Amino acid sequence: MVITDIDDKIIKRSLEENVSPTIIARLYEDEFKKDMLSLKVIPPAVYLRVTENVHHIVTFIERIIKNGHAYATQEGDVYFDIQSIGDRYGKFVGAVDSHVEAGSSNKKDLRDFALWKQSKPQEPYWDSPWGRGRPGWHIECSTIASSVFGSQLDIHSGGIDLAFPHHENEVAQSEAYHQCEQWANYFLHSGHLHLKGNAEKMSKSLKNFIAIKDFLQFYSANEFRMFCLLTKYRSAIDYSDSSMLEARSSLGTIFTFFHDAQAYMKGQLQCSSVQEAFLWERLAETKASVVTALADDFDTPRAISAVMNLVYHGNCQLQPVSKSDGVARSPAVFGAMTGYIRDVLDMFGIDLQHTKGQDADVNSSSRSLEAVVEQLANFRSEVRAFALACQDDPTIRTPKKPGLYPERIPLLKACDSLRNDLAPLGILIKDRGATSTWEITQGHRGQKVQDKDPETSS
Image 1 (cartoon, rainbow, N blue to C red):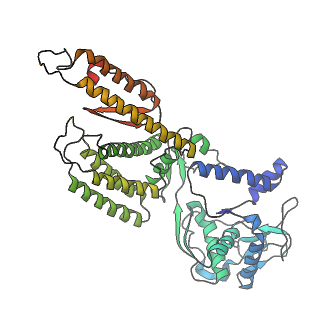
Image 2 (image 1 turned 180 degrees about the vertical axis):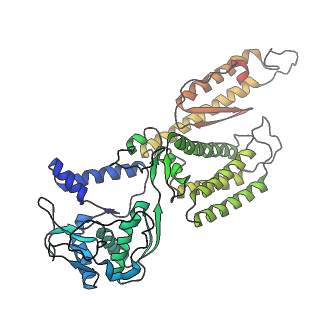
Image 3 (image 1 turned 120 degrees about the vertical axis):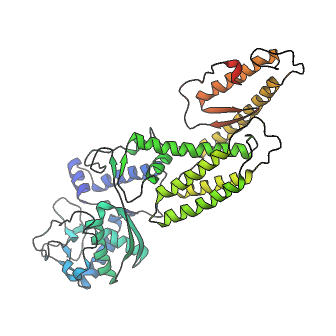
């Protein structure tokens, strides 16, 4: 990743605040890295700052001049010579509005763009064959990419607003340097993020943005990823609470399926006979559909739709029953389904295990909590089984619990109370006939769950 730590905006801010441009750049670089970490974005293999690569940039420009595609002015600026490459310039002009870069009146063509800028008073500078100055905007990317990847890129990405002039100029100067026919094989231009109802993209300069740290007070990194996956990367995307809640709902449906499937595989959830062959077919179809969708220009909405369809079919088969004596169980297919869905979501950067990205200490505490809850739930299940046992004498019945021992009904009430008291603490117990399942929910409940009739709720 290239870190642009010197440009017009940084210089302007440093002069306004009377501090070094380096201090300004490092401040925002650190904030950016923290934000990316909080969104669970995998860091690049290496960060390369422009100010640490100026000597490479100077060498890169010298070669473009030598190849006959750039020229220096008397003022000490260096411009790329658009006319020298003929009709090869203009691949991305139709992507966005055309743009003419301001500069010296000594330019050969109004479209010529700066490779090197003469430094102005009070601006930082580096020595070069053309005098003291600093790199132009576009040259840094070509230079550093070439130093790492060589004479050709396979995939180049960026926002649609960068298609022209930035990517156009990158292509021109890189092909002029390497003297090749095609520098980048594919460009993936992503759409903008908008606040719903606002035609402009989110931008600090327009002050129509939400800070990532503020966003994460209400939503998780997983939810933001799902929000992005539900729209094609090329399309503009509207941010709103309703769109974020849709993403949250999709993740919740997947989490619930995983919980129920794991309970079924452990024997905690009793179900009617599962149509195993049908689920194997749906799994095979889903795998093919996901590959087809991603091979079609990374169509993530279609891929996620295929996964959600598989989840739907799985949920349809996980219908709890009070008794399932003699019913054949099919844990293998649910193991395969959950394993595949986990792999797909992991590929997309969604961690099903930790919705808030806890650190190692919290993970350890979470595992300890799960062990405690498991023991508590097992003890409660044994108490419920004892309380629900029917009397041998059918003539002795209670009004609301036929066949139960009257003296054991307080035990059922105590089990209900424990379940209801744990719910606001984020521990959700579900009684399914004679058995129970539990889960630790993402957020605490706002209020206790009250049964209409404590005696009949169990």
